Amino acid sequence: MSAEPLEIYLGEQDLDRGLREDVRFGLTAEPKWLPPKWFYDARGSELFEEITRLPEYYPTRAERAVLAERAGEIAELTGAKTLIELGSGSSEKTRLLLDAFTRRGGLGTFVPLDVSTSALRQSTEEIAADYPGLRVRGIVGDFTRQLDRLPTGGRRLVVFLGGTIGNLLPVERAEFLTAMRAALEAGDWLLIGTDLVKDPAVIVPAYDDAAGVTAEFNRNVLRVINRELGADFDPEAFTHVAAWVPEREWIEMRLRAERPMRVRVLDLDVEFAAGEELRTEVSAKFRPEGIAAELTAAGFTPEAFWTDPDGLFGVTLARAD
Image 1 (cartoon, rainbow, N blue to C red):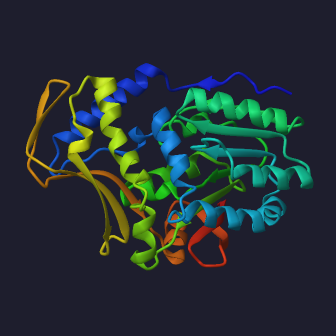
Image 2: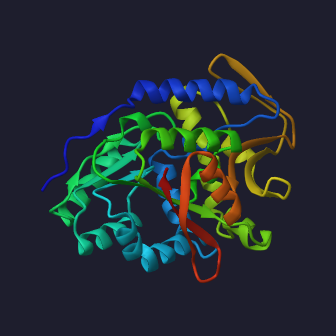
Image 3: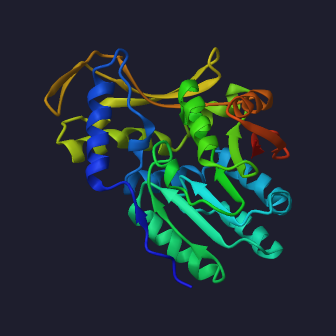
């Protein structure tokens, strides 16, 4: 069975407008910042896949270990008929769930949602070929804006993996979880992956690897802005910084200007002082009681919480009340 034609709710014009708005707002703020979603052009996605294979980057391995051990239990607990994945990418880890649901039987539809049309087209065709009895229905959209486009009917399990929820600020997380609950029916399920608070000596190297891959990934956002908006950033004039912020229990990725410079972007002349830092990502780390409280406040009941053997990463299964 081939994948169904993609449902596209986010086009090139939407992405261009969003990039322009974010750049204008973020580069005129004090301090300056950019949202992490603009890392992920084709080159950025390749770099991130490389990051997930680095020895320092534990989250992908740890989350995969949880899913490998618990996928069968998740299939039994939820009895889902439709599996929805937010920010699906290649859906590599999700195959552990698809395998478990295939063994159990009863899953009819897989719905990956992602902003990248090309990546989604490739992954949906591959999954449709590998799981011939499954209806595969890809949605091109932004999980912060297009939750109302998710298919209805049947018992649904939404999966949000990779610790991506940590890229949202606390108020954004609350808004997202509330919108997620509004998009679901009572009895539907949410499976969410969260990186856990631990020794910063373990966390920081995952965002500042010895090979410099993460540094290149971080600077890639400047190359995206140069290409898409005709800006004149010199990416090599910015140093990658990964800083643990203990009072927030999150990592901040930043780009530090190594010299004073003026950058032309859109109709702006953006000044950088030597040593000034541009924040490009927040990656919050969670405590089990914290993510449970956030889910409960949004209208979910946490039913199970699992970690990998080393306690690095958590996966929570919650039911919509």
